[in-house]
Length: 136
Image (cartoon, rainbow, N blue to C red):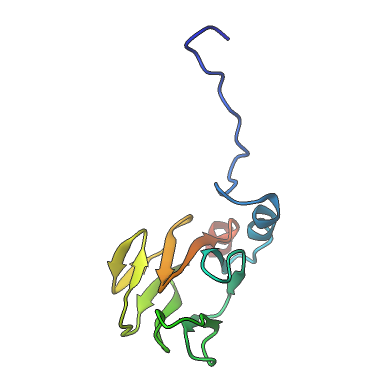
């Protein structure tokens, strides 16, 4: 290495950025048509939510698939829907809105690493790395 140069850093190919080794293992173990939401901020930081149904609801209602207990979250706040081999998040009439990468949305197609904010909860989206082979 010479002054003013930086040696290249090797990064594990296909590894989601910003995750612990345990979280990377969980993402790599996902079934082909599923995804994982990992809570980054909020009272449940570190929690993981598996998206493996056609529709997964999130809200303050105890009937929600993803229960987010805070006044900033509507009872029926958002839903994650499997569409076209991927996932879409939709706001379902919440008061405070649903955000993807800090932009308020009505609906958005989710991509690996996207940040979804519901109330004060922030989660990152991680699809199965095996989904392409499942579609063929």
